[in-house]
Length: 90
Image (cartoon, rainbow, N blue to C red; front, side, top):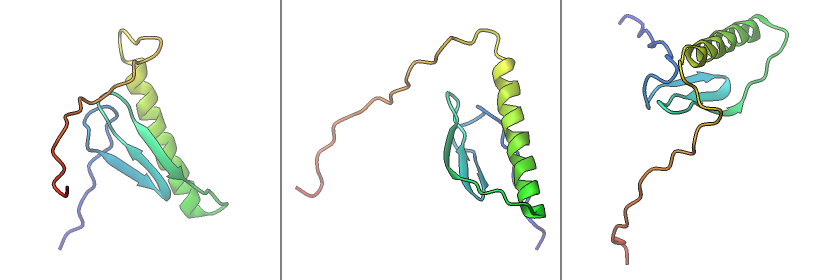
């Protein structure tokens, strides 16, 4: 069975993309990208590869933001519309 190729993390392209580096997770979104967790970098080859992957991802995020023609000073908080539902347990 051939190895699956992981799709590239394209900043702000979708609301489903995720990139994981060690215990650090980058969750893609069309309005914002969330970073959760931690990433330990030691003086070894594995850490070098993780650091390169992180640098590449952050460079792509910076490039995407720099490519925006009309960035606001600060993005408004995005709040999802909520809807009350009946409690199925009570």
